[in-house]
Length: 328
Image (cartoon, rainbow, N blue to C red):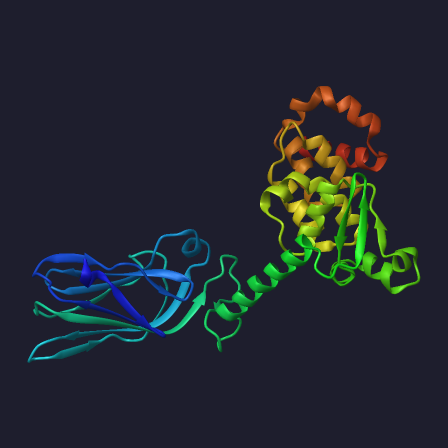
């Protein structure tokens, strides 16, 4: 419908409704404000009820808007009237989160204005809300700049633009950039800062990684890895993160490995946790085995595991058994 369209300009949204019966409901088309698509909804019975809410989407669910706004309703005609709401500051997720009622009996044409005074992204982890608009903090400009930078970094890697280092893997070679590697890893930075062979030859040998897994490592460092590649190579990436001192990658691998512990992989995960000193993963594996009683599902694999396991790890597992079986 023509009169379901909302016009926007700067931080103002305006909906002109030409005809409205004494008892009806109408929803606007979606309109863009900030990073969200929005809807206005008007209901008419005894009162005129105005609702404002974000369109249901992944963005509105994961990054709901915290909006500061004012609503105005103006009635057309000879007896022009203007109704103005208070200034609202609300977290908006659904159509139930905000409603404003006007006690009036007019019919016909009227205009709804919503002026957004401020918009912030409400954090799911309970931290500080992030401003959206330029001038309020990071906002859309920072988001656009980040996306642009990541796009450029991806091109630098994929097209080897001004690359100055060769990485030899077990089954092929890749081109990369000393500056990116140095900024990402204290080990790489040390290679290029001191008079080591890597500095002189501009070649790094990483023969304990395949070409494919090393490319996944570089994609992570350049900010362009996808979830599928990360998931596929996370064990190899964990080893690389530990070897080259990439703490954030090591944490990401640990969190990922913690998400899908099962009877089929718990002993392998426990060994990895011990090898790379991953306390969260180790605790998760021990809880899975003993607190949740899954140790009975891996009895056949235990003998082989104990033959290879570190003595201190075995002692810790034994202590976990005593704790789990301690009388209440």
